[in-house]
Amino acid sequence: MAVKNNVSPSTIRLPDGIYQNKTSKNKDFIYTIEYIGIQPFKIKEKTNFKWKLSKETKQIEGYHCQKATLNYSDRTWEAWFTKEIPIQQGPYVFSGLPGMIVQIADTENHHIFTLKANYKIPQGSTGIYTRPYFVPVEIDTIAFNKKWNDFRKNPLGGTEQFMQMNPGLLSGESYDENGNKSLIIERKKQERAYSKKQLENYNNHINIELYKKL
Image 1 (cartoon, rainbow, N blue to C red):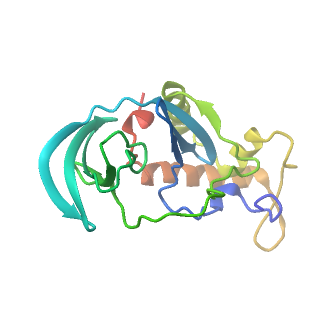
Image 2: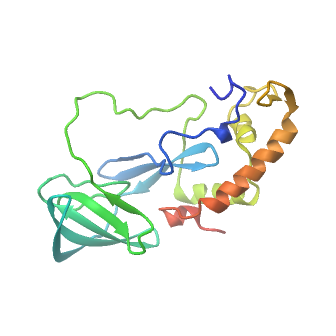
């Protein structure tokens, strides 16, 4: 759609909102989708959570919950899980407790997840899909961090990134909102400034280790 309507990918507002991470898990690994600019990357991490259980309990969203703590990605997390839902899962990457995680937050309350609904759905599509031209590149945490630091030092705009991700797909011509042809070099300059501003605004990442400055 962005190419068809001559709209820069960097101006597209995704329907997911600010939190755009897609996460999948199995007993051995966690996979998360992280973005550098408009390019998605699939990060593979080993599942190795060392939870510390507490005797402290309280009611959250109608569930009797027990407290547990965890050090993950340079943050300390406090989780509240319930044995009333005997599923060892939770939001984002978190799992491995003897019950569903109803609420989890880092100790500075920068990131908070709370279970608001729990219901069965018919077997079928998950609604998670890969968009054409935006296929995630599988990568490890070290390589992702290096790529992010390279981007931080020289941020590219959406059009420029899209052309690198899909060579030969765009002609190099660009149009303004009135349909007049404009120079793509000017569009690139504007989008680079926008990308730099986005890096400054969105700097409180959940996984700090992925975004450490080198």
